[in-house]
Image (cartoon, rainbow, N blue to C red; front, side):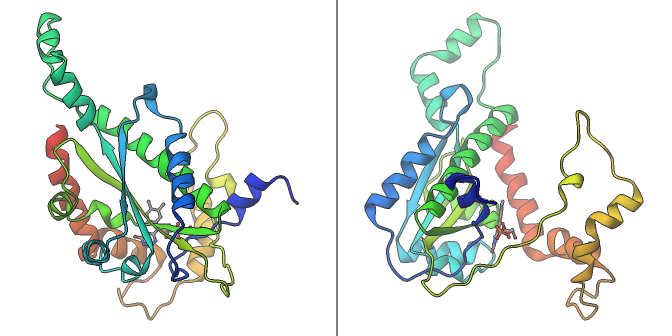
Length: 257
Ligand SMILES: Cc1cc2nc3c(=O)[nH]c(=O)nc-3n(C[C@H](O)[C@H](O)[C@H](O)COP(=O)(O)O)c2cc1C
C-alpha cells in the first residue's frame, strides 16, 4: 500500500555494495551533507564531523583496514562519521572552562563515556539522514561497521585527535542501471517492539524469532557450527575481525575514561 514518498523511499532501501562507476554529482553530495546537518542533535551541539573521502589511495587503505572488504575501494564516495568532542573541548579550553570548573568545585579533565555516547547518537542520526536522502536520489549506500577496527591506523590515516572517534562509515554510489533490488528479511515486529516495558523472550519465543534464520543454516559451514547461533557467534565473537574490533574499541575508549 502506497503511503507517501518518504515511507516508500525507506521501504525501498537496501544496502548497496556494487555501484555505477560514475561520480556522485557535487550538487547531490551537497544535498546529502545538508540533510546530515539538518538531523536532530543533542543540545544542538552537533557533536560530530563528517569526512568526505574520494581519494583512491585512502579508499584502498580503508578497504584493507575495514576487514578487507574490496567493494569499499570501488565506491565513488565514502563518508566517515566521527563522534567529535574535540571542537567543543578545544573551545572550552579557549574559554577558560577548566578554571571555571575549578571555581565551581567540579573536576573537569575532558569528556567521558556519557559525552561520547551522545556524540555517537548525533553522528549516527546524521548518517542515517544521508542514507535516506541518498536513496531518494538513487544513491545507494552501505554502512561499514569495521571502521571500529584498527583505531590507531584510522587515527593516522584520517588525522584524528584524541576526542574524535570514527563511529560510522558509509560507502555510496548511484545504483547500477540493471540492478534488481533484493531486500533482507527482518525479525518479526513482535520480537522487537514491546509495549511499555521490556519483555524477556521465553525459550519458545526465541525459537520462533530465529526460526527463519535457522532455515538458512548450512551444516557444511566453514565454522563447523551446529546451528545459526554458533555461526553468528563464530562471525561476531571468534573471527579475527571481531576480536580486532574488541581490541581496537578498548584502545579507543582509553581516551574517554
Ligand atoms: C552498523 C552497521 C554496520 C554494517 N557493517 C557492514 C559491513 O561492514 N559490511 C557490509 O557489507 N555490510 C554492513 N552493514 C550492512 C548490513 O549487513 C545490512 O544493513 C543488513 O544485512 C540488512 O540489510 P539491508 O540494509 O539491505 O536491509 C552494516 C550495517 C550497519 C547498520
